[in-house]
Length: 136
Length: 136
Image (cartoon, rainbow over all chains, first blue to last red; front, side):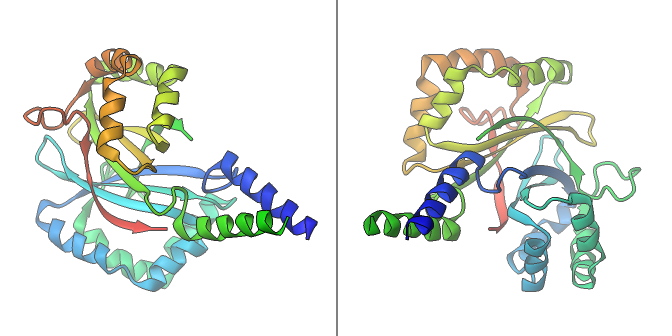
């Protein structure tokens, strides 16, 4: 009994120090263009993300994943994503995720809606932004 | 002893269902322009946010607050912020925060670096974006 209590308390205290994702959490903010004529279509797609895709994200150690949309002062729309990566090999998990047939099928529906910020950079579809501040 | 154990376990189970911020968490994504000639200055400011300002954010129920920067395809820089509001009166907390002298002093240093997306909207310095997807 005492052991269980001790484990429970240690877990709670530890969580309060490290936030959601434990000490290894990596907070990723990314951006990609969204074609003006595809805004409604993309929103509809994001309302019905296939459960297999969501399962893959979770298996690949993605947590607390949000996507926002906004039209900026140049008249174009952009998507901003935020997620926390809680695994210990981000590159490997990303590669595995991208190679999965279900995920590739999903990207085939979402990619035509998007315009990468820097098309010269191959493989950099969503552009990772620089984190310049964080407060727990 | 049993009571403490029960509370500990209930808290852990509850947290695992609701994520970081409890059932009331509000995830806010916002955007504001950053003057190209002020990028270095703003980054330096964010590296040395006054402790009183950080304390005020926490007291006002802001958690897990990150700011990202990125130059977009129109050549301009933008700041993107993400935070979780864990209180139960967002409008009141925001108003209290904005009225605080320490915070007003801080905004006097950061505001000249920024350009609101829609200057017509008074009081909408950072523009809140629309959340179109979330995965716990």
